[in-house]
Length: 499
Image (cartoon, rainbow, N blue to C red; front, side, top):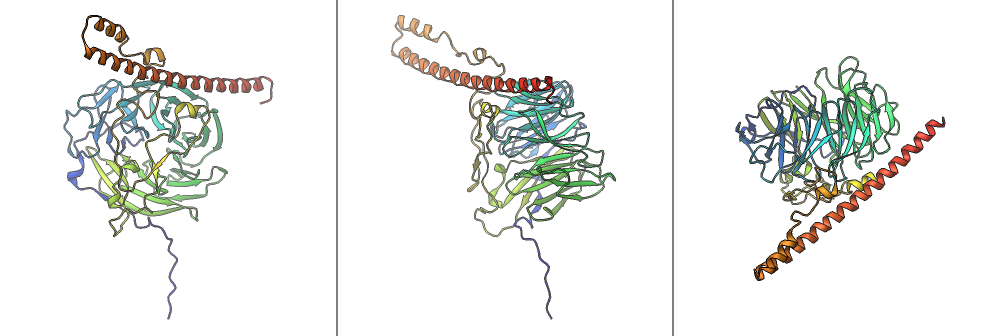
């Protein structure tokens, strides 16, 4: 008598299991924000975790070293420069010390966090971006271009900023007729996808200011949708059916007429936040108010989105932070880590692949996006695209020290609160040459000669920085000139009746 065994799909992630950390490794007494906004309210990288918290008379968020655990003292310094509640925080993918925050006060602020964390409250931002007329709730850093940040507000406007200069480089004010629910860049950062209250899924080219494709009623339900670009160019969305069932759908951007697959999950009313890992092609779904985290693997074989497992706990989550892949523990085969927000606690949850060997498991950890940007802001504005520069996780990843106030490249971030090159990068001591000659005339000896040489070298470095910034600004002006020409040609075609 023979038995025919069923065919089981082969996958190294089929047995991934989730495990919450012990109580002593959690963060306690954290007053997580009660703001009514369907965002994660948390962000984590290999150095820090940021959590949006309750704050009287304004908006604030905590920034703590990733290794911090235990009770968080109520006097712990916060980032507290917003005049209204903070709705979103996102770490820069190219500098682990730089974080952006969006607020109900209609501004976006960029902060430089010192290594080791805050020692006093931080209220002065490095850069403040003002361009929205209503509250700003969505932030998305460009995956491969330095200093490019996308913001979306309740004014239904998308803004693309160069945070190095504080300049608004692109604004899309007529692409969405209603509230924007989510935005996501593709792998190269050439296009983005959005979801909107009008139930439409859109694919947009921000540099041309055009909507490339639209799928009306991607999900039939009235509750908010979310969308995320996958590494291969497909789009994964979460939403609700007409019967208020929570759904997941996969779309091919070449043809949005029908989804490749749609899966119903349950009838809970919490918005499903998708967190995507391009290295493993896994998607984690966290619902606000849920006690569960579902995770799936996306492949090229039908039904394309494969359910792996479900993490369940007794406490509902108010938000969740997804740790950058560079921060996971490769020695324990940890492939992802969440920071689950409770009412007054932050609980790490590790996703682990069971392996017996203690050696580095290269098949679980393909090279991942590193800190080095593939492009400068002016390169992307001028029309260039490039995927992120990858780094190996073999032997574990060690976060480099702070770049002392700069993003990785030019122009300098800390000197960019104004856009005038003369006002932002003038030599710190313009009287140094005069002082040097005066000191020599009074015979102050060899030390003053050495000091003069050092000052001259410092001025040469400052001059080099100024010239670098001038070149960057020249490239920016050329790119904007090209953009103006394109718009003028479009306007001429409209006036001629060709469009």
